[in-house]
Image (cartoon, rainbow over all chains, first blue to last red; front, side, top):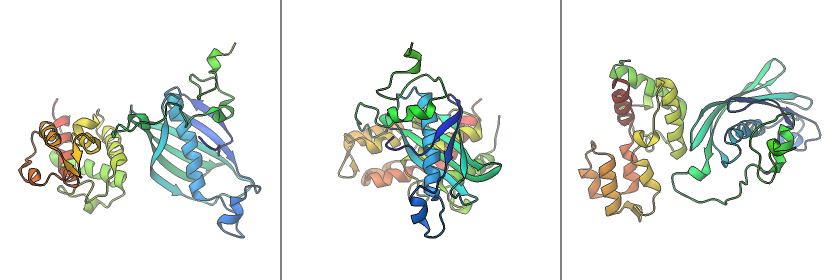
Length: 168
Length: 131
């Protein structure tokens, strides 16, 4: 994962569901460029937040051994604007997980209010039908995601980071 | 569980409407998934997942779309057409499909025409009424 867009996980049930939070601040420059004079979070970045939340959930289900890539946005419906000061709760749930892929469904809420419903499909790209080869190293899950999961003791670890279970 | 062909068709139709974002009336029995309904390879997985959920059964992807694996294998394809080896494999994988027409011009774009709504309905109907 090249950049981190969510702030941290607050719930994590391995192989089942996870909840992350994303706090939106006026210091984020893109908020001012998207619609000048009306700072609002672009909807594509809500999808990114869901992709990271759900992608890490799917990755951890396979102990971070698979390269999990967003392959399809099955559904993305938005119900309200997100503006600076909002705290988003991003909840993802695994629908199906198979050797080649996984489907997830998710909701983004602000307090009690529903902001978005986003369903995704991820591909485990080493199992692609074309037999295409990718680098050995898991470039999807790097050490950068460790801090997001700091409150959870989970099996598996991103590449280059010792697993928690191996810590003394 | 016994289901009539109509019931199976209706559920399959619902699955395809959701997976491909098409209108119900576009999902006719003879519509091709790629040509008419715009499906891409990842959509096949989406369809498999949704069928499993809708019918409560396991759907091995290679059973439902037996010819799909051929599309990406460079040994079986040359210049956008199936090679002799590719044709032989295809015959083996789809024994119940008449390939006489296809063999005259085995372009891979035409393999796509073998994936129809009807093919899914046949497969699912056979499977749910098996037990």
